[in-house]
Length: 117
Image (cartoon, rainbow, N blue to C red; front, side, top):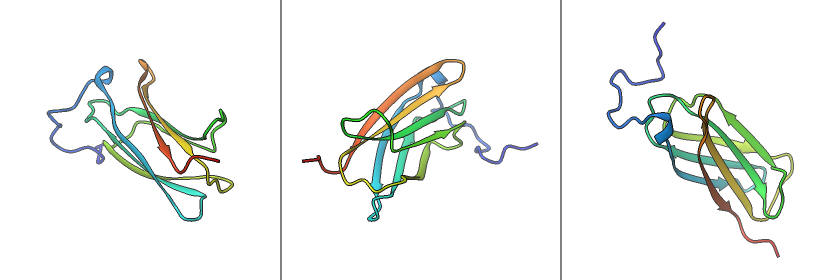
């Protein structure tokens, strides 16, 4: 069966799992305060990585939202994260890239929103 997600020609810049990195991580909040559009750029890969992405309020441990992506099919990911309640304070957006066999390879954090009073 053909894999339609990948290019016919392999990317010459594709990297092995140990060399993988999250190049960019950012979020755009929607006006309703319930949704965040997430953008993640990865290095080109030979083997699809797994990602865990969380939105965590400033000063807290428990995330407002969490997404797990198993075997990403693209180096440029865009998706929407939803929260149960609106949050207007500062958030941390954490992304962790891993492979089942190797464990965590790379992590990146970005800040979203205004600082709380």
